[in-house]
Length: 256
Image (tube, rainbow, N blue to C red; front, side, top):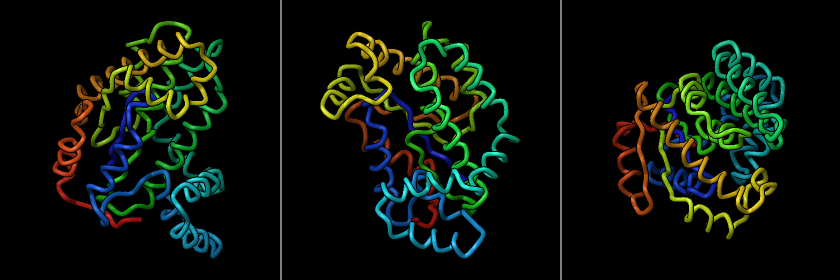
């Protein structure tokens, strides 16, 4: 499958841009990993009923149901497959978390995010047809930002680069390189993320700075190992969407 990930600080516009890319690809476009992996679940008649139900649910509801499915027996088997092929990635995540446990907010929640994403990714790998396009707006790259931007020490460049080399490699990484002030205004309007709410005002700004720096470091390192990286500055959305379509060579999967 062809994976397109989006990375950037909170408020950078990842989800909005991912939706715009879905629209650019059209009705026969890509699979949004948050709601699409149910197509790959196999097994009993109850599973087939679940798949049929998910196709008519609103996306947000479908995503919650897919979360439950990823925690089921199918999800456990998928996570086992991921562990066997990406043990270096998960080992690096756990090591970096241990170094930051004193100040790391909601470590259980963060680890659950990583495990759920890993299970979803493995299910998609197993079940989607060859050449499928998968969009992940909160993927492994952004999990790296969440891991290293919340740190008791300054952002660890070497650790970030090692993380980038160990994570599942996307076909395209889209860096939403939005400035801190724009991110701050958007977050003030819509509300800060659950993890950043625990920080004082100056801590939130420092977190945004660290998130921007971490996003750029991840993008730089992925570039060095051959990943196609597109940097999107404010106001350049249209050109970037068209470029993504060109890079994917017009090979679109069935819309789920």
